[in-house]
Amino acid sequence: MVAAWQSLLPQSSSFWAVQCAPGFTCASKLTSFPLGHDGVYHQEHGVKSMEPSDPDRFRNWLQTYEVGCPARGKITPAGKCKDNGDPAEEQGFCYSAQGFEAGPGMPCQEPEDCLCVKAATPNGKLSLSHRHLENEEGQELQEGTYQVQEVSKCGTCEDLSFDRSHCEECENCVFKTKMLEGELVEGCWAKDGGSMRRRQLRGEADRIFLHGLPVQRKDLTVVPHYKMWDPEEAFDPTGDEDSPEVEDQLALAPLQGTRMPYQSRREPLSRDSWVALYKDVAPRVQKAMDQVVKETIDAGTKASSIRCEDKLGKVLGEDIPGKIEKAAAMKNACPGSGLLENNPWSPRNAFLFSPDASWRPQFWGT
Image (tube, rainbow, N blue to C red; front, side):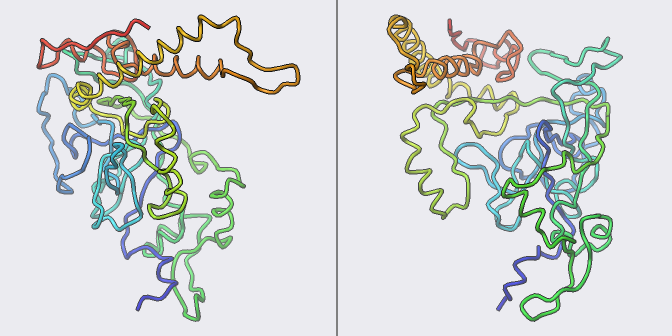
């Protein structure tokens, strides 16, 4: 029988989970992970590809990454790579833009295999006249100097109980023997007993950005991924699967109506996966856009009679700011409206070079 205290310690291993900080996106190296970082991760760990499949396109092959890293979890019906807390050998790995599994025996074995990068405003590459984007027949590459998050393994001291050297490198951790339920247990423990971590989880303590570590800067080539909005995306509850909170969330989900772009939980997709899925999603997007256009026009015809609030400040009637925000959010996420523009929700010119040249998306006139 396993003692209760043993559940406080991780399995005997030196791997660790890395979460990308807000504003950073996980990207993994193409020498270690072939193109197409979508869905379930199947590749054998440690396999390297030192020669590019397209030398003309991937000129900086050894420093070329693609968005998406192998992380412990399963793909949910909503398209999210989600860790349910089970061991990695039970739930497997899937590609995530939020983090990765690192260490011996894990997909990201080497320090450079997976990185958390801030790709929103990279500095352009000198050889490209400071441009940072190449687009050849719809295939995009982003090149330039990126901020790279330094990996910290000190967030949860207990995770380092089988790695004493790393535990002793963390200022907030101490490797020692302590009494748990009448037994002496050797491990890595938080110096403050874990009070700071508990306060952070409750939102009662400040979080130090990047754990106070400086960001690095690296010249990288990145294959981007793209967001996909599906108005009928499956609801993905938060919390433990069998908790009362999840049951309540699932019960209320049908009452929420159309899933808005900012409610989407789907992982960003590679260009090919985005194009393939869009053919299924497009009719649902068109239907949602037609409905919001109709509602907006109807609201405009009675604009003079709509009351926003009365003299006492009590909100009455229509939520005008909410209607405007909803329509604007849907238009901005509408994939077809930005194929020839800088729309982050869609690959530029994706359909001009689609294998099915006869198929074209509709462009919404909103």
